[in-house]
Amino acid sequence: MTSNSTSAMDRLVKRFRNDPDFMAYVLARYQDQERISDENLPEVLGTLPELVSRLALCRKPDVGAADFAVLVQEIADYTLIDQSLLANIIRQVSSLDALSKASQHQLLAAARDRGDAGTKEEHSLPTKKSEGEE
Amino acid sequence: MGDLDRLNATGEELHRDLLDGGALAPSKIAELFLPPLVAALNQKFHNVSDPHLISLAVADALLNYLKAPQQFDPARGKLFTYLWVAAQSDLLNHMQRERKHATQRVDEKVVELRPVRAVNQIEAEQDPETNLLLSEEASLIQQEINEILLDESDRRITELMLDGVRDTAAFAEVLRVRDKPIEEQPLLVKRTKDRVKIALRRGLKSRKSKP
Image 1: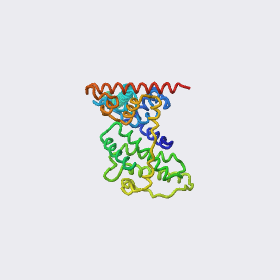
Image 2: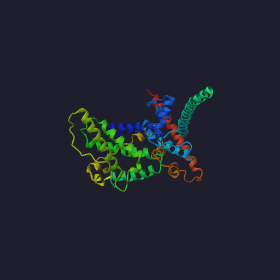
Image 3: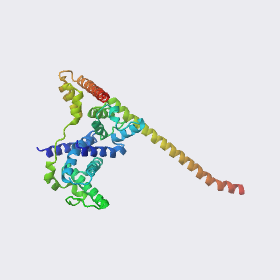
Image 4: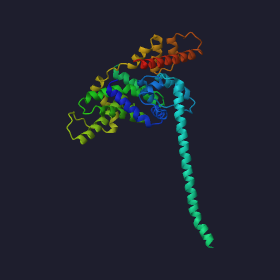
């Protein structure tokens, strides 16, 4: 590839880092979780740098899907990466994403509960007061 | 069949695969179309003040297509033309913005901006420049692999994997195990793929550790 093509490919990969449907997102999250630099990523994956871009632009297989293993094998072969390593990376990122979503929901629910309790208290105060007055 | 026809024929297949949710399709499309798109824009806008604008335009065009492939209608034109016109429109918009900011005269021929709906127009396919710009990109990846894997059948196996071939028979042919029982062949193929990947991984590691 020419330098302009490489630059366009890098830009494209970066743009997909925020899209959870793509492997670029999985890799970005995995790099964050494991503190892996862009330079070291090919070594961690055991493949060529050009094939990391190739991997990034593949669709992310859904861990819950019946064909998860088949799709992972397809991607692993296409990028010459070890199949179990790739499956583990996708599972790890998906699990931590799910945990983070769950804890966000818990926080939101707790905040909502506190809000509800506060509102109830606010509503109940005048009643008590009026009862006391009586 | 010319280069452009071959590109578009493959593009049509990949487009269908993309719509069907194929895991490899976005990657294959980007690899297939990105280099000729960059080359096409480089040739047409060779005086562009900032060459990064070209890569930006091509990346944007591919991103938009890959995120919403259903907007491309194969009945109205070819995929290369669709992407090329989209990238060109993007580039012209970027250049116009640059001009406004820099207020310096850019020495390019003025090309009128096309409305988005014109992107599918068949007319653009007739642009002779498009045909001239499909220079072949050497496979550096295979070259690098060949430096590590010395066995010819291992090289052929990696070629098939890199081409996204799924058919066990193609691998069994290379491994000369077609005469083995049909249920054994996938296992033999899988073992070879794993062995080749390990060899590649080790080769890359030892190459990196060499001074």
